[in-house]
Image 1 (cartoon, helix red, strand yellow):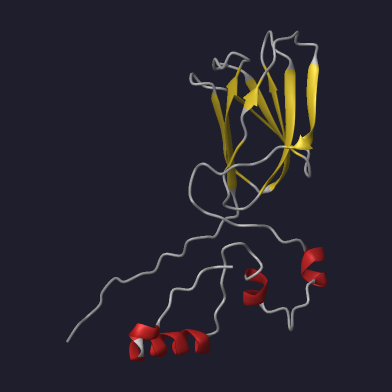
Image 2 (cartoon, helix red, strand yellow; image 1 turned 60 degrees about the vertical axis):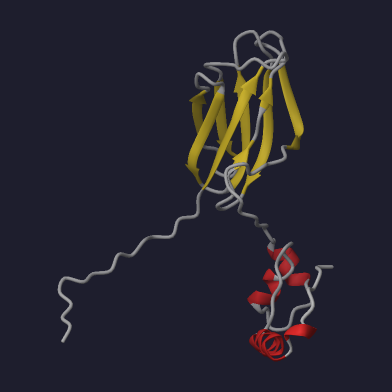
Length: 180
C-alpha cells in the first residue's frame, strides 16, 4: 500500500517576455564604457535607460515583446538610434558603432535593425493576422499554420505510423529523405 502525503502542485505562470542586449564600440573597435542607452517602447511611449558596463555592453531583460527604438549617446560621439521589433522568447543582440562627433549631432538610422539571437538556439517567426487571413487553410488548423515556418514538418499520426511500420518490416527499403 502506498500513501502519498503532502503532495502539491506548482503552477508556473507563462510569461511573454524577451530580452535585448548589445555592445557599444567606437570606430577603432574600442568599447564605450558608461554610454547612455535608452529603450523606447514605440507603442506605449515608455522609456528605460541603462549605462553600458565595463565591457561596453548593455542589457534590457526582461522586457515585453514590441517595437522599440534604441538610442545610444556618449560624450564626444554622435548619437545613434535604431528601430527593432522584439519577439516573444527571442532574445535580440543589437550592436552599435558610434562615430566621433559632437553631442549635438544625431545620426538616425531609419532602416530596422537586424535582430540576431546569439543567446540560444531557438528559432521562430511571427505571422501576422493579415497573413493568416489570406492563407488558403481549411478550418484554420494550427498545425497547418505552424508548417509554414522554416524547419517545420507536420506529419499526421497515420503518416508517422505508416513510416514506423514500414521501417520495422522492411529495414532494407528504408531510405533517407532529404528536405526540399
